[in-house]
Image (cartoon, rainbow, N blue to C red; front, side):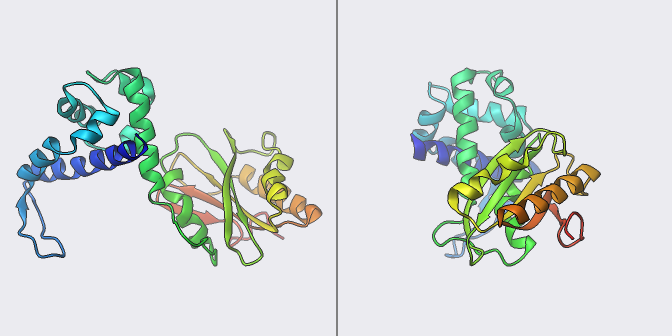
Length: 247
């Protein structure tokens, strides 16, 4: 079931690509093994006919192909829109229902996890390194989420922990809660990251005030706050680089 859900997320994504190509009359190029280019419409049809086990695991029923087409049609072939959609909106698609909608949301979330690095712990040498680890997922969020990246003495990532979601301002963010994961893991340094659903990463006055409070608390707790990064769509801003809240 786990593998099927992940693959279904990838299946929807791939299907949206080939269907868009079909609508645009473009062709899908040859692979690195030198395969002959194929017509996009034929590729879309092949994708719809394939992967029955994946569709069975996530969608179920006798009309998996039609359901997959219906989901893509409802959201204009945009997998990001499907990911952002509320479960109730997905469930309203003909043939989906509540349980299937939940499975589809889980499948896409697991698909996003495939973008995360595996193997050795990533090393953070710059704000760009930190942003790259979370930007894809956080750029899709419709509320503000605040995460803490825990680092060891070599700036290797120990963990990335969600500590808060809602409006990030000085009256609502509890600094003590923010440092709890670092204390539990004995992390000597952290990077604070939050997103702006508006897609504009420009730090607000509240962002700067929260940063100032976090940096001060870090000094008292002997935990270095290396940066506070704001994610907005495909962009990010480092408050440390701009000297905002760090002094």
